[in-house]
Amino acid sequence: MSDVMNDGNVAAWFVASIADISGPKAATEIGATSTLALHTRATPDGLKVPASTDNIDNSKLGSTFTTHVVGRRKFDGLSVKYQVGDQTTDKTFDTTLVYKAQGFLVVRRGIAVTQAPAAGDSVEVYPVMCEEPIITDPTPNSIQEKTVNFQLTGDARSASNPATLVA
Amino acid sequence: MADNPATDRITVRHQSSGEVIDIARAAAPFFPDYEQIDSAGRRVAEHKSSSDKKGD
Image 1 (tube, each protein chain N blue to C red):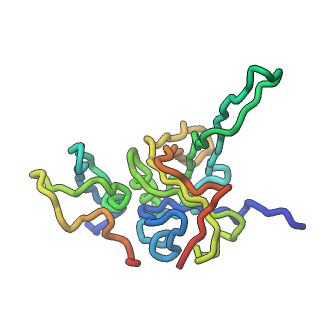
Image 2: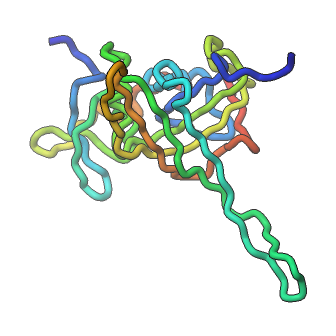
Image 3: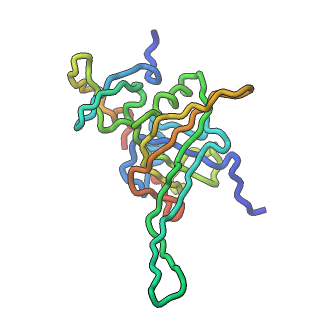
């Protein structure tokens, strides 16, 4: 079987500072004490990285077809939904993922989350700013959850042009 | 009471707009354009937002 499984193989971090998003530092940037390991509390479907691309009409008078070329890329709806916890490390999610907090959403796919970030890992890097967190309405038999939407604040290293971690 | 950066609050001010907000001390690295101030509005030098970096 050659299918790549998502379960247990998607890691995401919220990182405060990355000097060069084409080559984030595995130990000192991804591994900084302030970094949130989002996958430790995100729900199984809680990571949203919805890429979309505008189009530009390049149709010609002399043609009978409407044609387009690709335009700008965007990530409207970048978000993470996580379960609220009561331990000190859990509370850091609530106090860090707040309105106007800035950082970098780093996503690594296809490698077990148990593997520490290491030089050579391919990652997506999105410079983002947090919106106001959304608390999920309470329902019976539920865990408190929050959804934090992000605005993309700069050019990203997305899936078509990922970054590579350096030592 | 134990010192807890996850819940301890600090007051920070945006360096250009002057906007003042309260944040958790642990969140300071995620507010790179802000500086910590005391109750009198004076800058607190030791709380640089990037101070938790382990070094390059």
